[in-house]
Image 1 (spheres, helix red, strand yellow):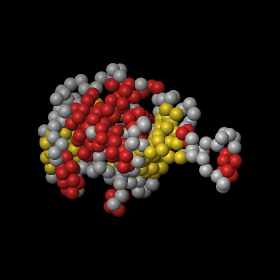
Image 2 (image 1 turned 180 degrees about the vertical axis):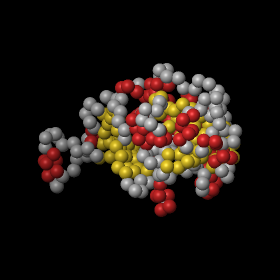
Image 3 (image 1 turned 90 degrees about the vertical axis):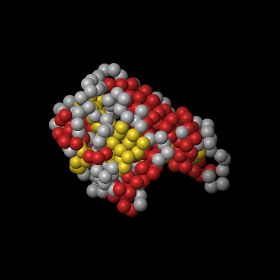
Image 4 (image 1 turned 45 degrees about the vertical axis):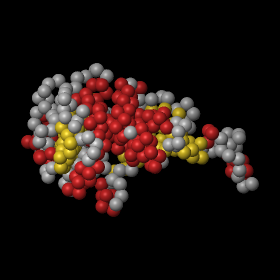
Length: 348
């Protein structure tokens, strides 16, 4: 059987090679570069197709597709969210993604995105905080110390200058895990026994919990003036982390309003409650933080343009390197009309 042509081969980044790539470049450098790519795509927001992600909900979780295109490339991510997986020793979130050439429809890249989603989520959080958080913020409360927490902490260090992280999780083992992983990174880490304790002295508050329910991780009396809240755990219908009264006191910034109305903290509010899309702040069309006493809230649920930027980034960075394998994924008959003949010739 003849070897497949180069057009039939699709570059693939496995979990092993994604880890090799990140460690080779350096985790914080990857986070900074990713944030730069995401911000660049937010600046050309209006060039993209945009739609809320396509979600299939069940009693135990959700499976979603997240597509977008800028007219040159098309990208999508498959991702799940199953909070009860952890009890069975499984990941709560797994993902893979595809980047394709719009002019031919041929895929250009197939990539794992479990790691890449953690990286792009952290990069997006820190990018938003760069525009919204108080100037010279140095302490962050990290409430929810699961798989995202270390990436969030390091992204805020690299992009925003945070040097002190105060950790809290309802499961003390998760806090011990995060504290151990962050030891030696240059961050000062304080493990706390309550959310209230974690927020002492924090100018930035990140909530990143996994339970699929209307939860109140932060009550109204816990949040004082002048802070930035990075709320990234509420990311599907019926799942929130903040008391509604906090939202009413905050200036709220979102990725894509039609999606966040369904999935974000603002699902608790009326459909006409004012919010600002982050791309408008980045592009200078709207203001972000305007006063020292203002509470800014980034209601981050994750949007397809961030995944698109991440796929575009790794595609450019790993092309022609040992971090990719070529998969024989595209049928490539000598005559494009003769797929049957290609099958029959494979017998010999």
